[in-house]
Length: 328
Image 1 (cartoon, rainbow, N blue to C red):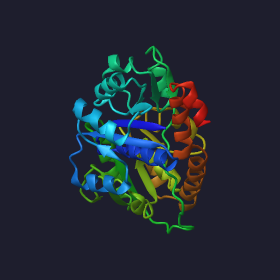
Image 2 (cartoon, rainbow, N blue to C red):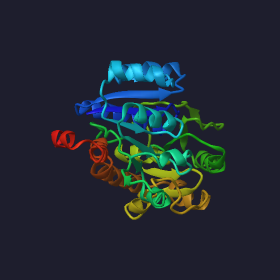
Image 3 (cartoon, helix red, strand yellow):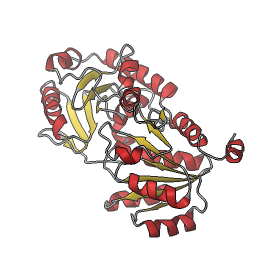
Image 4 (cartoon, rainbow, N blue to C red):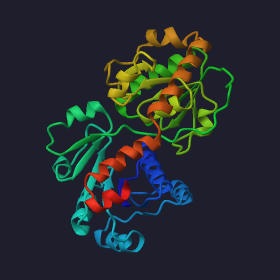
């Protein structure tokens, strides 16, 4: 199958999701052309070239058509991932006479009038499906998948090391500050991969490949993809964003998945007293057990292969019958 993937460049997990999707589609034998607008990060450009994902950055429709004719002639479908590139995806769909699908990654998705013109819409959580249920477009739930680490250390030394794996916003800042100050007071070594800065913590900035940090971490703080990555690496995860759902446990994991580990399950602010019960004098045995549970759940539910299988099934709904039969 020949697939055009469109998105804007963001310094967050959404961009990582898109490149992981492209990589896995290519690994499975499909052809992909990535259109990524507003890519002005030299470091990321270097990394993207290393991935061998064919990509272009121009927003100009005429130039894009020539790029498609050169790099991906006769494409079968467009898969868009951003409201910023939805007009481009819609225009290319009309120009090339092929179907267009959009994945909605966030609740405040704009350009809903254009979204209604898509052939299908993928949402990443059951909460989001309920919110978009009246949109009059066929909607599919495909939860985000991640590449599962192939080899993990059999035994990680226990230390009080926490990692904020997140892009902060004004809505998150109060919760992040309260948790950071609490962890530092309780003797934790705290670092940040993203844009969260605070006195006393190690700041790494936004990092696309975070495996080396996760190997050194015993607690991950964040939402969405960060939580899934922590669980896949066997690390306890604390759901914290604009709201706080706390530790992911066997008892609440299914409920927190409903809102894609966003914190919106409880819609509560960070509670220092609740955090203290787990993190002021942490039990290595309890946290390691949560890490083991998370790794098992990620292996069962969060693999990129499982996600791509569901995405390909959505594509198949809009392909000609002859091509669907060839894919099966």
